[in-house]
Image 1 (tube, rainbow, N blue to C red):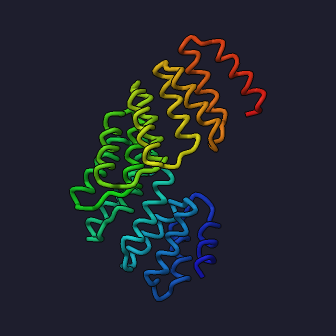
Image 2: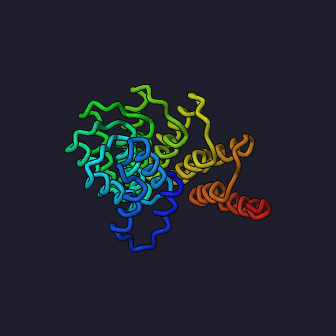
Image 3: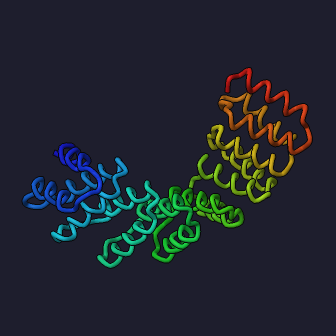
Length: 276
């Protein structure tokens, strides 16, 4: 039944008419939905990034005074996050508080992600602090989203602080966390801190890919440390990490900034020959 409901909703043409959405849900649930049915529909809409439909479906529940729980709000906030609708996500958090629906780390993580996608680092940090105020334990999703928001804003000090808090809280960090923190430090001209983070990641045996190494190479390039950049490039070429155009571009840029134009030319030729 869930698939047929989702199909009917997703077939509605823009601009969405609330009456059309409500009519489909009324017909599907004449006696009202149970909690699981509501979760499946709202989660399905979130998976399709259908934020407009998700918000209208939530409104339908509220109008009919059907029970809503944290799973339902999480799904709608997630849909908003995927579309960078941070204002709506924050509105939903306030609605949850007013309705006395208990919040959790997953909900806050989704809301922080919406702020990150909307390039609102101040709001992301505000939500992160709110988690502690509400005694909600932070998870890796919340940390990653907040650090990524700091990266976009070029706020390397805040990103490093969060990384430190994450380590002290024994929250497991991964390649996403490290890449964002390394990139932030690199953009802030703090290449030495970026390399320190990369060393920490190696010691912790965190699996990484070309995104993380590319961030480290780029950080070296910003600091005109072409030797370090070349070291990472060679290490990546000898490992299972696949080289890509960003890898070559970052290293060429690092060599160029270090006035090593001959190495830049050699790498450019290698790049062309590799069809990267």
